[in-house]
Image (cartoon, rainbow, N blue to C red; front, side, top):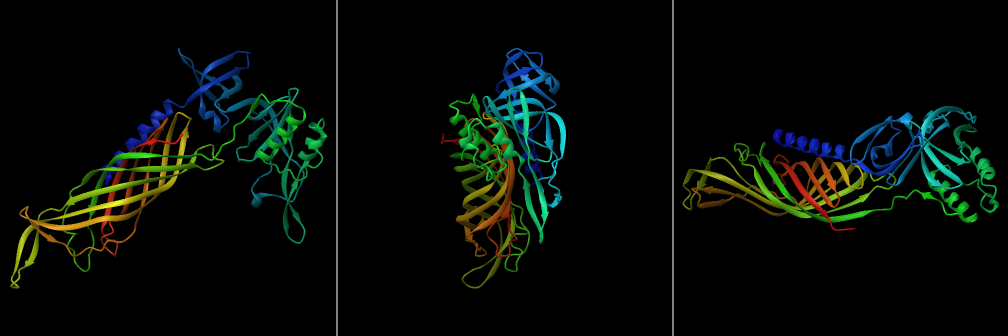
Length: 416
């Protein structure tokens, strides 16, 4: 088992090193000195306000610090640096106060552009994860001000200071048909974005940029791979230790099947529900051991033999996959379950490589459950994963017969 863990850790480290080297997408950077550069931009900027970014051209890689950058365009994202104020109250109901008064702090950060035009909508998340929305008009950045607080009536009731509603009426006042009733507008990205789209339709303007929303993506494909299985017979079986005294060989066998995955919406494709369906097989052989035989005349004897155990399963490996990377290359971590139905189970004792005695000590359960942990990487349509599975063999009603397995698969996406 230790060797399997070492192999899996090595595989994950290799995958992560490849990911770290290839986390770039085509883009532009605008510098404070007025220069505009096109090349490959480090895409990890998507998820944080960076102190620096790496920028590649055909000839070299250059590191630009935050104070040198003015605007970054990479993939489906535009980030624009600005000096802003933001509201500092918590978004956690347990930490709210009963004060509706807005409180502000100031910083210079990258704002993410949601929709760009004569009046642009931008957003920023604080370190605590609280979203803040801004309007840019004639080079002026205005915070849409909002605050949750607790009102003390008969109990504590969650209320909102919705000053942003009056601000939107003023800032989008050249289109009064869309600002007549904004009291029901929630302080969330998509409702405010929809309002801006209606505004641009009203003034007959086509935005120069609109962020592309995540759609529910479903992918499926085929898997080929290998399994390495170890049978562990520690424990008693129906009051005997018939399996426990034997050391079993490891089994290396091919596996084939398919996979299915879907992106968890709102996670920037970082979280996925991923399931592999595989046919898995193993055949192991125990060390030579003494077995008692009774002939038809009732005479007993002992012979040296080896036990052979083999199983074929239809396995489903559902789990949560966490991915980091870009559209081309992603590093994946996955944890989940191994659910299996035994299609074939055999246990026999071999004497002198020719005489077989069927073993009666089997209880093949209809469903076995185990746990899995692993990861890998995906490159375009290829997905390479390795994971460890630990589960009951399904042979023993007390769950004493265990299987340790490492699974390595190469998947190919058939969906677009």
